[in-house]
Length: 264
Image: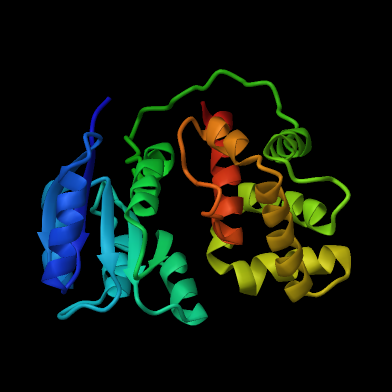
């Protein structure tokens, strides 16, 4: 299996050295560049085409949000890396801005090294979605018709495997959230402004109650000890017993899994 190519951008030299050592010591990862400002990481992304970029928010010359915005609008870049954002700032507005500009994970400093490594390795499952396909004039690809899948059944089955009980409110909200993200993936980037309100309207409740109920459903599954099932579904350890995903991470993981199965 090919190694994942990783680049790092942080204006703190000690942080880049620590992250660099952590990546170099892992047999599944390859460090392809270290940067201390936004302009440097932009050049590394163009030259080295990393699979993953670990990106600090606050940097000189160009901040992390500006870096992601630059590549989200650059049609000349064939391969857009997956961005894992590191920040000491946990404000909701900044977090939402990061996700809307293309971040797949937002990790607060200080962080656990093992958890960050697990996030990086999960990129192998979702990274292919970030490689842009360039259309070729005159070439038409004909795909073999596939039998129609039952999205409702697929979502129900995977939630059941993870151990979310059907009798709690968060069960229905979680199912609805996953289906909405599969149908409209970009909605996960505005989870508080669009996803929760959409579910709330469907169930005649408030967005805050939707958020709390989904959080409760995830916690119930974890407390029932079904974390092994989630790791089995994805083929390797993503989380530990004490390392619960956020609502957005959990919804995105399940939606990604089902979309990958559909495209296989």
